[in-house]
Image 1 (cartoon, rainbow, N blue to C red):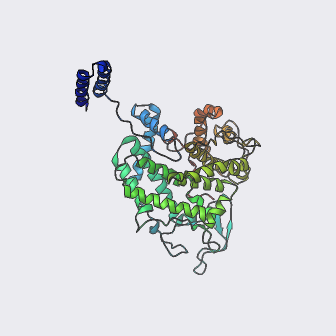
Image 2: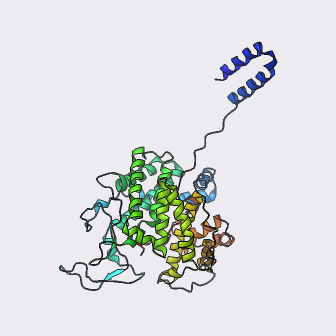
Image 3: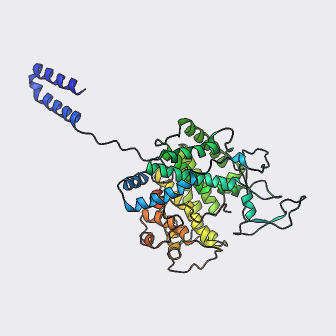
Amino acid sequence: MCARIAGRGQLAHAIFGLLALLTVSAVSLAATACTSPSKPHEPEPPRTVVMNGAQLAAAKARYAAGDPELVGAVGNLTVQADQWLRQGPWTVVDKDQTPPSGDKHDYFSQAPYFWPTAPKTAANPYGCPYVEKDGQRNPDVDKMTDRPEVGKVFEAVYELTLAWYYTAQPAYAQHATDILRAWFVTPATRMNPNLNHAQFIPCQKDGRSIGIIDFSQGFTSLLDATAILDTGAPGWTATDRDGFTAWNKQFLDWLRQGTFGREEAAQKNNHGTFFDMQAAAIALKIGDTTTARNLILDARTTRIDAQLSSDGGQPAELARTRGWHYSTFNLVALTRLAAIGDHLGVDLWHYTGPKGANILKAVDFLIPAATRTTPWVYPDLDPHWYAANDIVQAAADHGDAAARAAVPRLETPPGGNLYPVRPAAEQLDSIATTG
């Protein structure tokens, strides 16, 4: 190409003397372009729906450059990812119990805070009737394996994928793909895209709308993981991607059109917030930006104005027996909603409602307890102060001065501070099922 340009320049110089100077200049520029070294191609950031892809790519570059904070965080991450290499895949059809539909491809879980009141007998195997004990988790719930196993799917895929992204070790991505494929894509083992039998109550309900929260934050982290796999992970094929996309389209239709979804969307506490977060993330993932944007815009009034007080408190969450847990839990959903809004040009972080409600103010409300400078005066059966860690760091990233000052004084979560390698708020005081 460069030789042909030069030849044309000589011919033009001979024939068109008056244009010689211009031709020589053009040839000089072309020659320079052909001989100058080009910059190495930098891959595009992952097209994540919650995390900031550019921030993630910058963290990867810092890790490659030997940044001590990132090196330490990736070290903590790979310790966890290595454990997942020896586990899974899991499938929804593995369970011993059959849901009321008769189809083991349907997800099946039990309400966590409901307890039997009678002895379990052959005639009454569940010990019905059941009564609610808010915040007290019934250990029988773990006998229903779908919920703990899908939790492993979410966590394993996320951590394995991130480990591959930073280290380029193919085994991480390949195992993440195997796990995703078994639960969501392969016809013989895939889960049906519904939660019709989530959080059932024995002898009372075959499933409940609030069971939608079983997927909550974990599934939206999975969406980000697949965006990272889309950057060229070994083993993750176009067929896998298309199958997962098709599953998400069906699942979003179930969430948006079904009775359970409409009931959950109408909830005024963390359930409604997590519904919006989940639906907005899925909509953005499949390219339905109109639905995603509308959910984010509506959240200003239905979530921020309706749920936050002017001082940053969350009355519906503070009234629970686990006020600390539910305050941080709801803020995980609110800050992740705000992060989704960042992708759509909607700033929820700095929105302030007519009565003073504001996400950053709600984060600041938790900082004194999170840093152990002021006692927590509200109920909580078993508070874990590190639960605020990611929330505070996310607020600091969005200009909250109080949060920025608090970051060095936060309690480190078990397994280390992973926020630098996956910059988005997560539920850190994880319990198998939240009600």
